[in-house]
Length: 369
Ligand code: DCP
Ligand code: CA
Ligand code: CA
Image (tube, rainbow, N blue to C red; front, side, top):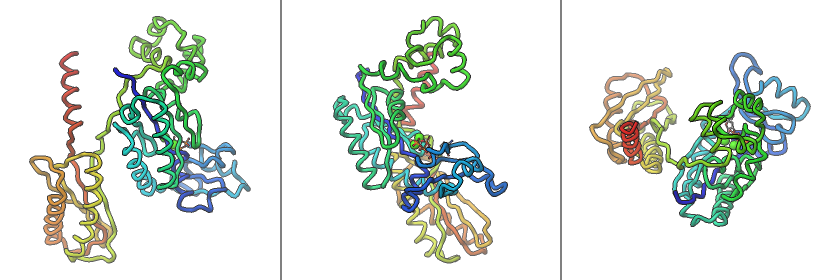
């Protein structure tokens, strides 16, 4: 395989930074975003915290009550998670990132891999310029900072991005990979959790450098052929996992509340038409076609109803989408007596070019084994 240049972008203290963005008075205070369990006032866990709060030992996963103790008299702000808002911010940012990549793979709400081998002409210097441009655009358009790692593969890019946070930019060229990894603890590698780390410790393996020097045959004796080989390759920074668009989304939908409760088809379709536009643009962005169209209706008594229709073959047409939504609503209103409060539209049953190719390779893989 030809040498690659891979970028990983990870947004800094993402949920908390989103909160800072919509309320700038939070910026110089400890900010803690919380998942409240609903069982008592402070019951629940910390989702994330800004870097001021982290200085006091607050981090993802700790109990809210413990975070409150650590931040007593520190003028800290505790907020509940608002996923919908973070998704929206994430979408805007992913759109920027995608535009800079030959191939793009989002791996979570706040991070993505970009294969920029062609765009950067296989040069790490060029990739650095792309990374700086990305940071500038994300800052200018979305008011957020991120940390970026650049490496010859996903494994190295990910570790590079983690090394310097927040607002970091770390480049590890092919010839620097082994010396970059060597001093780091083995737990930096994907797949090495607490248990494996302990086991390696008993073998005298503490750093990734120790792992790289360890006899690979011994390693496969201890961990089995597959895992042992993976650990060895990872320790010297080898990884040929491609950057791959993920089409695992099952559906794309939008829902919205009407100005007032109504049974007027025209009013409803005005709203759903906007929702269809939004869903469709997301669809086109991801290069997907759908076979099913659905509507969701929340009635005045807050009960929820849904209806859907599935076609023989996939389409990505906006007109078909809107026409089907219209039919579904016409039918629905005829059958139901209550006013409508909220309306939603949805497409699902996706297919895409990459999806078909994936099925094909699965099949070929099966035939070989
Ligand atoms: N998250 C969560 N619970 C966790 C870990 C993460 O709810 N145990 C959420 C909140 C984070 C978001 O996922 O903002 C992204 O996770 P990251 O691990 O990337 O952490 P942050 O972006 O918060 O911080 P960092 O600056 O270290 O990337
Ligand atoms: Ca992050
Ligand atoms: Ca992340």
